[in-house]
Image 1 (cartoon, protein in one colour):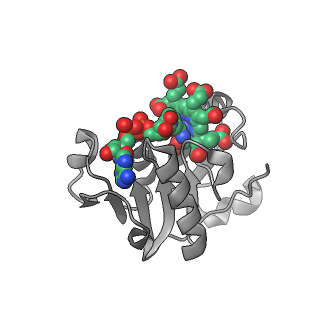
Image 2 (tube, rainbow, N blue to C red):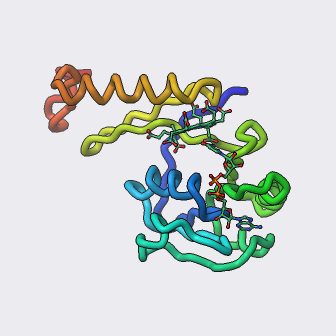
Length: 162
Ligand SMILES: C[C@@]1(CC(=O)O)c2cc3[nH]c(cc4nc(cc5[nH]c(cc(n2)[C@H]1CCC(=O)O)[C@@](C)(CC(=O)O)[C@@H]5CCC(=O)O)C(CC(=O)O)=C4CCC(=O)O)c(CCC(=O)O)c3CC(=O)O
Ligand SMILES: NC(=O)C1=CN([C@@H]2O[C@H](COP(=O)(O)OP(=O)(O)OC[C@H]3O[C@@H](n4cnc5c(N)ncnc54)[C@H](O)[C@@H]3O)[C@@H](O)[C@H]2O)C=CC1
């Protein structure tokens, strides 16, 4: 499996998460730095999600109509068959899907991210070793925090630092 890293423009793009448990919370923690246009479809919602009042929560079980208007979809329920159904429906609706219990069956996976100002580093092992990806990200973050990676402050300095 190979994955292409790209930076996606999320203006007007809705993110949909099916399932509102631990993994959904974990996904929101990663996403909220980039967008708060997030809808969750789930009969229950983790307290950590409930306290984020900006989340659009639809208190129900999933059906394929829920995908209308979504750009990226996370199939994050604890039922394999439901996640599989979301994956199949998303392909019909032409939205990109991440399947949390079967990542290689989906369209994308989530990298380990470090951001500072305009700069973002996203590390992936291609789904092979999430712990290694997290370690690389942490090592890069440590270097930045120690000042060992120099961020480019302004355009005028670009030529010198590239
Ligand atoms: C394929 C992928 C999912 C996808 O995107 O589809 C995937 C899969 C799996 N994760 C597992 C476990 C955990 N993952 C985390 C955390 C993160 N996982 C993330 C990404 C990805 N994880 C994708 C591949 C990325 C790549 O390419 O390398 C991060 C980077 C980004 C994000 O999820 O947003 C985020 C870092 C958050 C941060 O620090 O920023 C934690 C810790 C925690 O939850 O706090 C645990 C519990 C560990 C424990 O309990 O020890 C397991 C179980 C097997 C195992 O434990 O080894 C699998 C399944 C498997 O590996 O088969
Ligand atoms: N990709 C990853 O990083 C990881 C994936 N997992 C997998 O993710 C899955 C979910 O785990 P957790 O979030 O911990 O489970 P959880 O039990 O905390 O949450 C599941 C959520 O799905 C909801 N749900 C169940 N049926 C539904 C339906 N038909 N429609 C809509 N929502 C529905 C529940 O109400 C609940 O909110 C598990 O299969 C687990 O193995 C676990 C750890 C890491």
